[in-house]
Image (cartoon, rainbow, N blue to C red; front, side, top):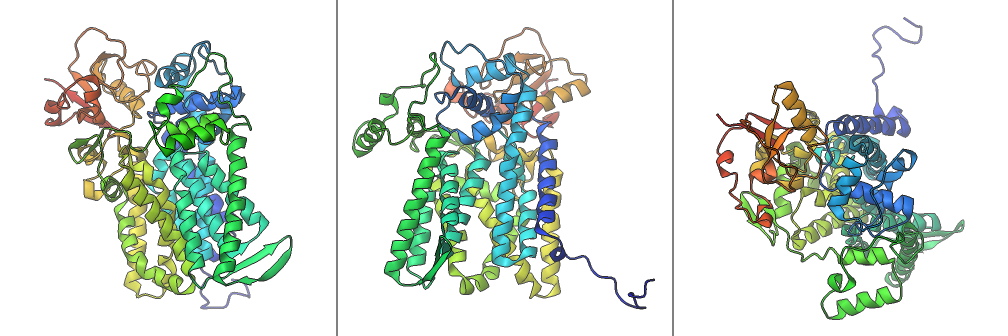
Length: 582
């Protein structure tokens, strides 16, 4: 025993507060990356990856944006960056690239699909790391370091985040940049400076070139500005090293915020053009065309059509950006399934149902207590509360009103704000009785365990209210559960159990032939090669089991009703059901 340690002295406790921020961030970044990288090796391409990855490669290598303009290019290009440094073979570009058909050819016929997918998925992970950092710094600013650790812990084990973070898709990228844009703008509301203005505008631009569903940022920013104008909040201004008196009067706040928003808009506008190489024309390759014509995508009549034509003719936005925006009208009928029912118009409460069923139950319970924990912040910094609540209410409200009910992933952008709010429970719990602290710790442990238990099948996660992932197909399908990701799992199961061949009804765009699955064709999303022969095993994707999308092929939605009443031999990743016909 050293002289400095006296008899009976208690050893110093390990405290998070003693760790530097970079150690905490490194730990959680590695934790997130480990979970996602281990999981993506187990999964085949999800539905849209067969389009997004080749589209990103075309954007980067050839500067051609005509393929898949319905999604802005940033996330797709990020996923395709590693492909520039590897040997990639292209199908012939002398004729137009057509969405899924040529995307499948690109991945599964011309190249090693698993290799390209792994490289592309790893390239997407920095966006998830960035989002975790934003959550950490935002929570620390409002509630302290311990709260920030708690918030980023919730983020790092959220199954829906872990499911979509590595996919070559737009959802987590849009979530990251939307959150960064709001965080940057909220910092700007406290102190207007050139660096903060540039960061806020750049973040806004990045969000807008990741996914069109980030357009609700505009009403969010407007409402936040209005909230500042009509409260006692003061704005500090510091430009080029000089400080000015705090702005407190309503008129001056309007002037400052209007100028700041104009500056943000200009930065965002330049960012959009930069993504398209400051070129109006979206197509550079001679054989490529947009899938559709301007007359087909423009509104039929009215002021909206005139406005879009005016923007196009004056070249105020890149051609591919404007064309892509017009291809995804919110009123487009989309077949959807929920709670055993089908609809082409959707339900206003669809995302309420998905949120209740696909959010971990411990997090739902924590959120019930959050209003109590936020009261001190409301008294101290009402604008801070406003910055957290407005994005959740606006985004969730617009999602419900849109009736585009094709996946819980469309409300992922609300989660970062919920994690930050949940961080407020840590300082609140310190002032409560010991059983409150123990309950908070128990819920956090339950949360982590429920996430680890579903590894690596994060996409199929459902909470205890739904009866877990085994029962998820009864409530929701498509990208909520079954996005074509488990073909590799089916092949492993067949090899492990001596099954030579199956009848296959597959919902997805990955190739059964690529994974050397011997099968006979049953109706699915696309018709593979039909073999002859018999086998007692039938593999059906959960989406097809419910008859989802079958109407598009002239089939009865009850095509597989008899199988729904049977118990499958196995549920592959919870998304492919394997039956044996005796």
